[in-house]
Length: 423
Image (cartoon, rainbow, N blue to C red; front, side):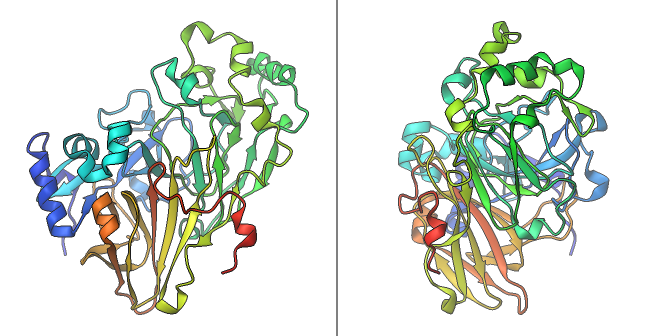
């Protein structure tokens, strides 16, 4: 069978609504998505995204290696010298391609549901695989009020470490998070003052947590974190703002511009302003792990039926459920119909099967322009009607991750609920 490449598709910006409607009719509420690759110039790829090694620098060496794949994204990547569509997922339909952002703009509530459309007028979340050889700088993401100062949106996020993408832990499978209780603002300010002296010592004020495949974390805005080297599934708000507070990582310089890129220009040298961007109470929380750590919780005891659906991201940030995520595992030869309350983006991470009768499989290796059969967007109507998953393998589980938008799953567990998990 010949391989299909995205370059063989016609890129369209008109007649999108009729293409979407035809695709949804054929699939009972699903849109097939092409892989969306994103490079980062300041990081080293971890090589676990299944991207062909010859394509790690497909955007050019000057752009950096590809260390991220974004899922069901309508959020542009905030990279310097970016391509116009960088970070935007493409829908594949009838030999054509168009961005999911354009599809949502054209079809609105028919895709993401009336409640989310009426409130946000867009798909306000996205997820990604984040995959690096080593740790990244200790950084934070601005909250909505701070990001608004530069015309952006804030960025809470979450982590899940899928075992299928973590057969090796790479160089540093630990993440520094927050600050040691008792840390003072003057100490952090001193780190900023020492930026050009080498390692500014910000990690001396923090503590690292060992990362474990099959677990995760929920990280609010304004919390410092230096993600370690596990490949990470990251449901998050649809924004790419950040400020990096660490000057040197594995011997590589972190330029001051990456600290202040999402702060008002007149504040770029205002150390007190930069320090005060941090949530001090949240960063120095004595019970940081209890308030942020996640373990999967089965939604119900369905193992006897040949499948299990587990919550992998749950909990609230500032009292609001901004996103949630689940991991569905279907046993070899089994089939199930899963009903959800809202639209979602889905990625298959293991196995071979079908989704509403359409091909669904996790590829072993992907070329940069190749189309895959591992990613879909499900509309709210399709999710509520129910999506049928079938594992056509006789030996291997079929495993899919899916993430949801804000306030979709009020029945999701509360933070810490894994401690009382009875299944």
